[in-house]
Length: 398
Picture 1 (tube, helix red, strand yellow):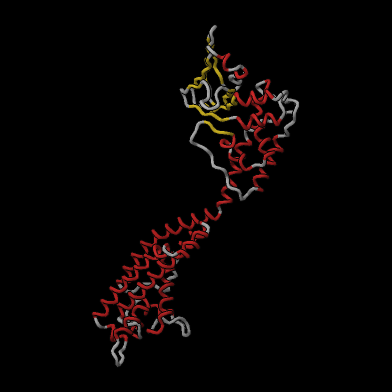
Picture 2 (cartoon, rainbow, N blue to C red):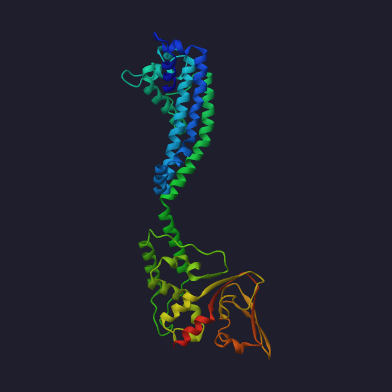
């Protein structure tokens, strides 16, 4: 409507002319249609906005969810505006006027006017009623895009029906686009809650591996595992807004923090207690690392230094390339151990029932000359590895 009004004003004769008479000129009609394509220059708005330092600074300060919502709403408004303008222009092309003749010629506006117009309400007839006409066109565009379809504005002529058919096909694709963006926005808005649920699920997975607390285990009481579980869950809930730590999945050697990301969100005390409940079962298998000789503080230091190793089927292991020799506990899978000495060779089958290398770890490297210890994994296996260095360090303090 604004474009047509500008064209009429620019081409009117000095003595004044009727806008309807001017629109009958074929040259002016062609010029108006060609000039409409200039609206596609709005596509450059994104590049123009990026060149503005003020807009770019404001954009960078906004949250991801807010940015996605703004882009989504802006896109909806622009597309609805273009459809409304074309829908209104289609009625103009058929009636050759926005004046009184618009209500007598066959088009969607005349149909709506004859069946829905109420005195004092919106009136799309007349050049001066461009705002009302645009509002009615925008109403039809939005209800078509959103597939609501009240039915009070509908096509009448062949051209309008074809345009409506094309728009309905496009709207089906657009509606899928809308749903996808809305889901993405909701995910970003609820990301803290989702991360909280992920951390709680990881914690529950870790807590399920806690060994049951027995009153006869050792001289030190590290607390009832049920109480520790409850404290950990409550602590994670209180840390609702903290980010979960990233897990290192690019190595077969990971720490307890990597294997159980929930540990990174706990306080130091809860972290020590959790590490004890995770590793204490294996420490009790080694007499000099059990609670009879080591305090919970010393056992927790060993637990913090423990590593989780994974081995593929058919893989062999003698010593860690970084941490050297140590004690191995096969937690999942099984392996065959082969120990060679100057006097004899021994082969054994190992699973989760006993530690491997518990005696040899106390022997200095120079006294291990001529002896070798090698593990051959016959299935995918996961092991707890305690480096010799931390064992010697803890024992030296006692």
